[in-house]
Image (tube, rainbow, N blue to C red):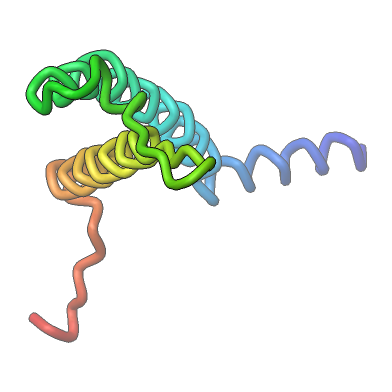
Length: 106
């Protein structure tokens, strides 16, 4: 009997606390992150590299200082990836109207 109550409490917790929505959001977030990452690494980086003409791919851009090689291209690629992902999340929240409405300001 106690085990049944525990399961009922557990499923009520999942239903009322939005755990399923959180899990779906987490899975979709990972998929969007992979999609944006692929767009940046497979499309944008080669195009930027061609436009700049010094390298085939932005992520392979480097420069040397004395005996050290500074690989700034991968960093720039990750910055672009982050900015695009933040932009996608921003517009997804705006489109789905998920931002909190401050009733005190209205």
